[in-house]
Image 1 (spheres, rainbow, N blue to C red):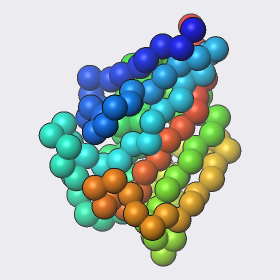
Image 2 (image 1 turned 180 degrees about the vertical axis):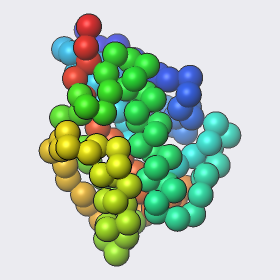
Image 3 (image 1 turned 90 degrees about the vertical axis):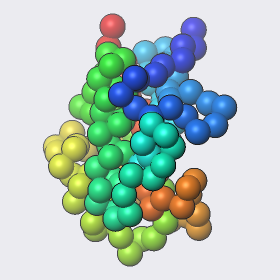
Image 4 (image 1 turned 90 degrees about the horizontal axis):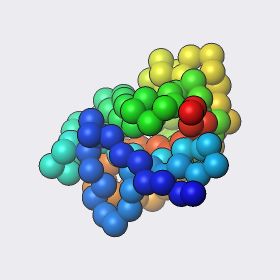
Length: 126
């Protein structure tokens, strides 16, 4: 059965969707961007935005019987591939050697004109 998931430590969605859903032992997160609880963008540089997004994803997973070590797939949307190396450096701090599968896509625009949006699929432990 599909279940809506949330974290009180992650900003609420800015639209009609869940922070994440679980189904058959997997968690699917919605794309996370670098916003605060009021929906305002928290920073302007790619490193800080990436760190905020991954911290929020980590909180969301941890509060729902999972974690970054349980992530199977990551999708990253970047406003500019010119910032790939800077984003990747912060990403490596969070994922270390767990090395989930990953796609990185350059897009023309993201919500609230942020520089990065990330979603993941992770195993949910019982």
